[in-house]
Image 1: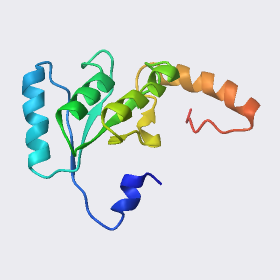
Image 2: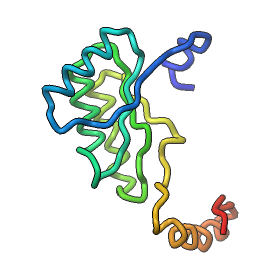
Image 3: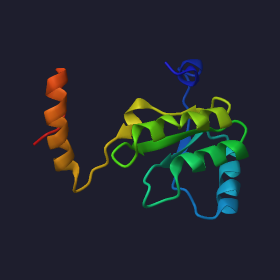
Length: 136
């Protein structure tokens, strides 16, 4: 269990999920307001085409705040090499342990390529004795 979860397991926490903004000064002011309001966390989606880089944004937000937990609401493994996602550990160093990468955020985004990807997964996982979880 993540220490942040264990430490406050019996408390209700509130965070905000939002999209990165292109203007850094606006985003910096926004996240500082979020922290001042007492929210616990801020979450950004990861999509390399539709928004600025999620993990760069998270590192910048972590550097601009002192208490706010930062995390990716979705990390698109279909769009990123797993080694690039593993480099998200850099965000944890910048944030001094405030970065949260939940296992269920590592998802394959729904897209026109979903069926093709599931077909590929179905051919790989049975060889490893695992179920793909993909529906036809």
